[in-house]
Length: 556
Image (tube, rainbow, N blue to C red; front, side):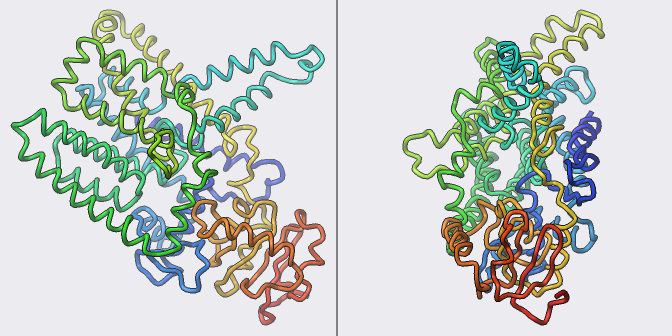
């Protein structure tokens, strides 16, 4: 089942590869299905463009000699795959999606087997696995109801020119964006959008399996790898496992010595992780500036949602989890079963983290929904499945196999509507997607190739949106840095935004701090009046590249 689901999710996500948006039929497929994907590979490129074998500098740091201070396990793997094996982004993404996705779903099957105490391949375990992986909330049903009501109440003349599908797509996109479900991967199937997230989730699921089966050495190794890979995942895992172990030390006095030894090892790993993230990295000003970006009002605004919106994704499994926990068998299980206690603690901790911006004494929230990413869904779904398993054993084991599967498949289809809805409404993947990337034009790719012939330097781009356009992509596909790039990872972001406007106002002589200027002709129709003292390096129908170095000019 893990293989079938992996292929299904991967094929759906790869549809844009074979279906370019209008005007991009002869374009270049980048493989970047999310805004953050180019950043991961810009970091990977830095490992080799810099001096370190495994450390890298921030690719958006404009310092003369940026410090190589960052380490990331998966970035290192991607970097060596790119440089040594020659596998580019457009192919790495689908390869990692298949490999890590398959491993992740296998691990989730293992988690289901441990929680439900069922052998591999049993009917209910297969059902539970598919439900945990693919399920969702009531977002799809709610948007269909809204769209139908809106369409049904339109004036006759407007209804004649407006289809139900048009209204549904608009409302779907608004709800996905407004409630932040699409951006923050609220269930496992959505995690396939990010190969980095698949890596983090493999570490998380591996830790959970090792922890619940008391393989403490393996759990400690996965815990350490989490700290070496992603601070959000590591911090979240720490916030879950420490109180969980404290509860177990109290509830299981016979295992107290072993658990204390295990906890001591995790504390030592955490101290080392905190020393790196809270002492070493903050000693660099550019890093402090990057961290501050994650707490900017706009950064928090795009990573939080009202409490009532959480009902749309978590409502059904929340009801199921609470119903199970307050039932007689659920209360008994909570007292006797450490696995149930762990899931309850995970649910409570993640629920607080994804809403910590609402806590009065938290003065500097840090992208609350960044702590979601399917972890709350997983624990609530597993607790709900314990209740469904009790009903299954009581009512469904006595009827025919076909009727049983009919009921189970019906439940899966209802809960899977949200996943289908998410991909259908996604701006980069869905049938009516409106964001160009993962496709870029051939003219844009030609600019990358020409810039790669220049010595490494700083590039200034004049375009509609440099933080999501060519200015953002240049550090990934060339060895240059750009004045404006990724929104959160750009040091001194607010100062650069002000400086960007000043540069546009003074665009007459070539600025000394830049090695090249890339201008979009369509966005700047009067480009010929800009930077008149500079030299034209390269030009095509869409772009013009200027530089101050006369020795590289190969066109009049």
